[in-house]
Length: 524
RNA sequence: GGGCGCGUAGCUCAGGUGGUAGAGCAAUGCCCUUUUAAGGCAUGGGUCGCAGGUUCGAAUCCUGCCGCGCUCACCA
Image 1 (cartoon, rainbow, N blue to C red):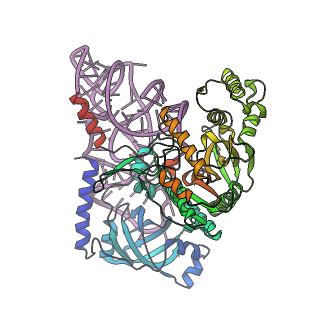
Image 2: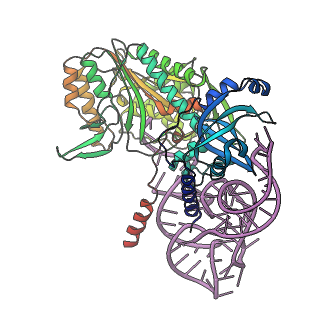
Image 3: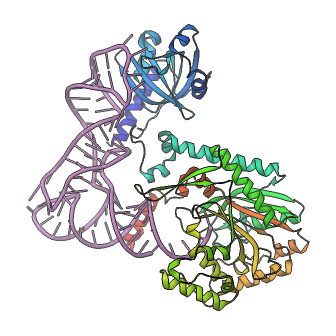
């Protein structure tokens, strides 16, 4: 019999013995007087004498994380709400039955304990237990107490165990919660209304990505899980919601990686009567306030590099660097690539091609397709040259029209749009622009995207006639933005994989995949 | 998808250049009424990821597969 089955059986037997002691095995509730955190904050500064003089009676509940039996007395550590408190169980104090119960407890069990506070010889604040109440049994063995659960796969697959064993994991998700609360507060403060728009859409629009497909039986139609809420939120701006936002999941059927999970959370917002500069200001404030809510300061640590040669950056969320995409390419132009790029180079396809040639001669490779629009090449060049240099929060603005099918053009440079992205820690964390509200221009942009699609770009935007109709009813000028919540959370918690800020990241199924793949391979 | 690495007890890990499996924690029994990675004595626990191959003999060598991690390309 495998060990965990044996332990399971042994612990079920103990459960029966516990019942025989008169303790319901899965009772419905336990009235506690204090959380463990309350006890720690209220009594940590009380001396042994003070606790003795004015006895403090408490009832707490928690999970046993350590247990030490010494003949006719014993200790245990209870954890509840992320905090730990020791209890002391003495046969004289809890009686024969109470002590029998104590001896039947295992690591991981939930119990209630009532008694009074005291300090042990070593000074640790402890409950002197007078009554033990059994609450729930852990039938499966917890991981080793010292190293905890470190196997990354098990940590993600058995997140519940990860959370029990690794307090710092719990802390990251508490910070994530505080971060999102703060973002909602800031948006509300600015008069934005939170809405929910479809997750299942007949046309997957509002971004450039491959969608997941699903099917509705009664209507017999294919639907796409949304890749962005953008086009629906802008329909709401048409409808008179001047300030509107949504915090919710997007789904993109693409690769996984340290910054990519197929479902991820986005804050997306639209503000009427402003442009990309206006929405940029709101976005900066949302992130600055979130940083404060998470870490109590606008600074956060960002550790880069392998263990041993680590560099710790201090990200400053109150000071934002700013440059146009073209300025960024010029600024970060690598010395190895010869003469620096100049503004004039971006004005023609030939100029851009020369830049790519120079860059590729010095570096390894940047894909270049002479048939694709020049703007697309410039954007690719930016990613190759500058993106990995962007550690501190940096706003990059003015993007090529060719890669910005939903943004308004710059009045003086129609090949460029009023669009910005925010970068930090080598990641894009936000994307915003002055929203294109000319329905005829929008139709031409969609048509240009359709051409890209015909050229084989599966991710190019689809035509959305209803969206054009909405614009035709008149959308006020507006600025809009999306903020990648998971990535901001990574940056604010010094987490270097998106899986550490998503409670249940996508993994291959545990057993089924193995068996299925195995059996189909056997058939072939 | 390509490259590199990993998979041994419930957990954290040794071992491995071929000779049939080890530690600590966890578990079980006994001792112990202020311990704290409690301690002491004893005991149980493994298809060494899966399937084939080489061999008298495979955890170890070879092949394939599965899973995981890192990395490159595409993507927020």
